[in-house]
Image (cartoon, rainbow, N blue to C red; front, side):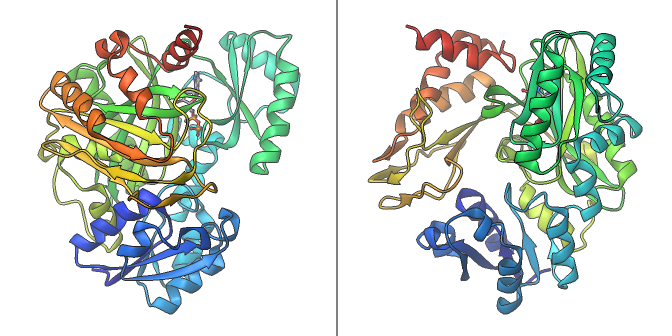
Length: 449
Ligand code: ADP
């Protein structure tokens, strides 16, 4: 097992990884920008190294600084966390070239799935159902129109290197397509340095359902059920739950088996998530994330498995020595993403936290690096806390969630807690009868009130 792990991230996820290391008796190295010297993950780590000024490109994305920090502290392994360098194949490769272990998948799998055109082609080859669309990239407007007419309008143009809900454009008819194609390409080039674009059928009212997996790189792959992440704003997840209110037990085991058998063919290593859109009883692959996800605690709550611990164990050469039938999924879990933002306008609200009180009690988990007196810097993602609640049934989970939201105090900055409080009273949400556009439609309707 490793003696020392460098955590190449910040905030709640750095703290989450530190906690797993601590429980495994592994020492931790925190890296941080000058804006993050006072964060909780830096305070709790055994050692810390400043890797640059506030902008991410100079610190959390600064590969030479991170590798130097790992070398001078004598770390054995690097955990990339979420975002930043976690899906950068070159970083994973360089970590290995520095005789360090990358706690994640192979660089080959990261780059395979990072390119969405290639990922979709691979998904098809390994037996995953995909969204109808172009066979690979589309170059000319004529080609785009031909594909769109075959699959039917409306269509979605997607950047092959896109991510974080960016790089997508809708075309409702053939007249709109040439302009949508050219805008999508220009934006993709500016944002991701790659103007490769492909086409997919725009599904009307699907749900976003994803399957959490762990592979050991030797062909053993386990799944931990699904998460329903359909509650989104601007293609960004707001609240996630497991199991999905839309699936029955048969559909659940069918999609779980399809995914594990597909990923066994790749001998996938580490944690990963296969994302699907689900409509009229059918699943359509959209992408694979070759890393831990923000919403992983939801699966941990229903399975009792510490996914970060497993990632570390696998990276150290461990095998998955349990079988799928040993993974018992029990009860219901919901995660609320609490952002430092105005709950109505969603304008970021960095600043000093004057009061902090986290809810507790049976079945309540808070993943947050906040504390009273901490200043949320303006430079990074606005996620500041995740409230994850577990109950024996969805109803129990909802009652507990309402109670926990009521107890949560984050003073001095604005947060999206009031949005979650409204959401957990909404009949559509309570019925579990929502799709990927529902939250935005509801926000628009209620904004007019
Ligand atoms: P990203 O990598 O940016 O997260 P995804 O491909 O995972 O991009 O898609 C993000 C979200 O965009 C999905 O959860 C869904 O809400 C929406 N989306 C993606 N593809 C389609 C599609 N073909 N039809 C309808 N909505 C889609």
